Structure formats: C-alpha cells, structure tokens
Image 1 (cartoon, one colour):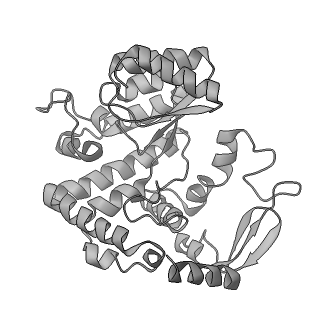
Image 2: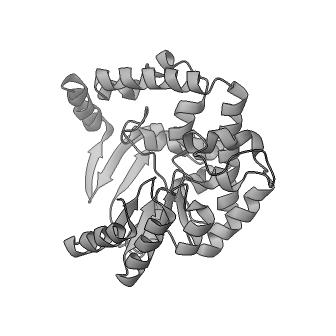
Length: 301
C-alpha cells in the first residue's frame, strides 16, 4: 500500500470479494489509514489488527477498531509527558524502548478510553513474554508441546530468542516491559474493556492449541482470576461475535463444544492442561484418543 487511493481500492476489493473484515498491519501512513477508515465505514466493513506508528491508539479508538492485537501502540501512549524520547520512531519491539519513560498513572486513563470506545483487545501476552523473559532458549526448546513443531522451526525460535536478548540486554527493561503490559491487561479488564484469548500461534514458541493454555496462565499472572481468564476464550468470544445465544457457555440448547478437565481450573489455572477429553459438535473425544492422534502427528511432522 502506497497511497490513500490504494487503501480505498484495497478495502473495496476485499469487500467485493466477500471478506467481512480487514486486517491492519504496521506501516500505514496516517493518510492511508484515514482513507481505509472512511472506506470501511462507508461499506460497513470492520477492521482489526496492528496500530501503525503514524496512527496511534487514540486515533485507533476514535476510528473504532474491532479489536487491537498484541496491545499494539499502547506502550507509546504511556510515555510520560515531556519525556526525552522520540515518539516518532518505532520504539523497538512493541514499544520496549519506551519502557524507561512510561508513566503508569496513564494506564487507567487509556484503559477507560478503550472501554468508552467499545474497542476490544487480544493481548497475546504469552507471545511477548516468550521473547522478553530471561529464560534460556535451549531450556524453552524442551517444552513438551514443541515435539509437534518442525525441528528447523524450533531451532529458528532458539536463535531468534538469542538475538532478542542480545538486542535488548537489559533484564530490568525486559522485566518492566512484561510488568507494564500485565498492568495494562488488568486495567483494561477492570475498566470493562473487552479481552479475547489469543496467542498468535504459531509465532515464537507458540504451538497451536497449547499456546492458548499458556496464554491463560499469562492472563492470570497479569492479575485476572482464573474465571476471568477463562471467559476470554469462552463467553467473551461469543459476545464479541454476537452468538452468545448459542455458544460461549455450557447451557441446555447451546452448541456442544467444550473441554472436560480432570481438576478444577478455578482452583489453579494450570489444571487446564489436565484434559479428560473434548466435546466437538456433540462428538466426544477422550484424552486417550487425542494423545494417540498427537503421537502420530509428532512422529510424522
């Protein structure tokens, strides 16, 4: 995309093709985004995704993003007024370079503004913690679920993590990056802004399916109760898509899609890993069958 006219054309093309929303990626100019926004509004088409640096979260809220992914752009909005930092620059990986200049008093304000705008967020917190934490990548490579991923991909993740730690050598800054994001997740929830479960799998250590369980743990680490974390992948999803009358909770007459666990996740969110079986469209799949299928998959990956 290289002009407002092309932005308008691409949105129109996507709408004509039959897509129901547009995914926003980084790099749009403000003029291109404004053209996209105006065209999407005219066509009653939603959009979601990243918040380009030239757009910023305040404009994204004003425009009415369907969802913001990865809390993209929020770190920039938290920079203290008058801080000696160039806000016109990218700020590193999801604003990690802005962390030393963050004014946490701004978190509540932007969380409330998000709620007022009716904009939802998919934090993908585990995606960020996988890279920013200080865990040895060789140790991370021993996670059980990684046996389902191609060895070459896992090796790439190990090297990528090493590169990230080299490029961001301050353990304190990385820790603060995680903690500020956790505080933002908690503030968004407390303000009543919608949160949805997502991990961006198969990006950066996130194995599809398993990474959602790790994201639940990350949400609890951010201060949500296990129940509140579980809502992000159940009730909240149904509300977001407007299908709460038939999905999202276990009730008579609703879709028979659920996971049965061996222990109570409200007592310990880690119990989501203790799967007894899965009900999919009314068909029961016991844990033994699932493990057998996964074993075949791992052997043939």
